[in-house]
Length: 229
Length: 229
Image 1 (cartoon, each protein chain N blue to C red):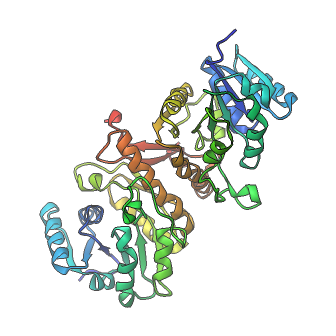
Image 2 (image 1 turned 45 degrees about the vertical axis):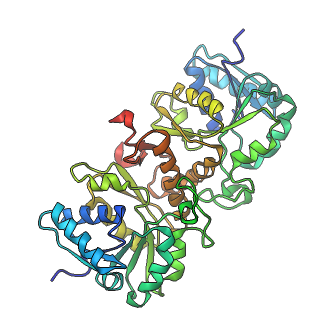
Image 3 (image 1 turned 90 degrees about the horizontal axis):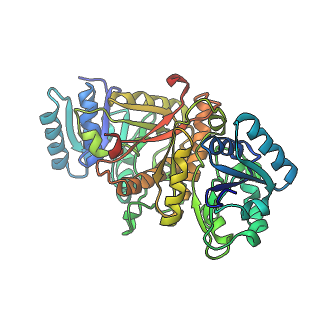
């Protein structure tokens, strides 16, 4: 049996972005547990991953069981279901686990457009998640700006930087996951509160996708890093 | 005499970023008028540009005279001086002019750090400027994320995208200025309210500069534009 430290749980792994990450992590050889509110949907998503990635080590479970099955639990549910999902898995989470928030408070959650966000009392969706997890569970923000289309196009690298924010040790663990997806590069995004900026950036990118006619979705790269020069 | 449509005024052109833009626009052959609250400082900055760019067509003036001397007026003053600067040039501005806001409401304005911002009632510094200019003057947001160090290093292109936001016709005029700086590329940032996100991005980049030990400053590029592929 694989060590649960090596397993990655993806709640909402049946959605476009979550499924894309599941495909990519499986492709890199990691074991993935896909969680969904409805177990049968998680099973179907796992089956889809196995179809696309030969030898994929993947399982579909209900959200609570999936959250208990890995040290790192990625939350990939639409913003409007984020709080209820976290409340639903609270009992399954234990000290030392890391919950990765990749949700963006797009204004679609209140019937407005995806090029704008709604304000979050805690500052960001990631900080809202932080306010809901049990003590001892760390929250890290990452992956918001990665296009689901690009993730699912497995034959191409995903040209995008991922800004990872949160408490230092947990942040470093999540930064280590990022390059498992070919093309992605992790940047040290500092404290969790910087998720405020990274989440907003997704709404800007969605507008750029529309105005620059790029339905596959733009990515972002930071230039001038010392390693590049 | 050069047509004032071809002249670019830069208020605060004595600061690092404003001076950098003045150098680059002069290098591209454009006439630049540098404005400052103190005329002697504007004269000194113009002298500096002439020293670095042979044949530069540049002049130093007080802010009010500089604002009257060009159709496009770039505001490059620290956030805490932005409102007072705009109030000081109101009488000089006329219908059809474009004011470019490149300021970022960094929390340094209230004695906190540059990796955070303060909230602006109007939504962004650019929208604050919009609320202060006379009717018929358009405000466009641009250039916030361009490193002053990179601008001033004239022998190298500036690897950065510039997200330009504001009313369509004015936005297009400013987008046309962007590639005058070698390396810069303009992206269509839609309505002025998107300045909220672009301004915040500067604070994130300043934090990344620190954590990734890049005192020259990172830039950003959007990947996957249809033109690239």
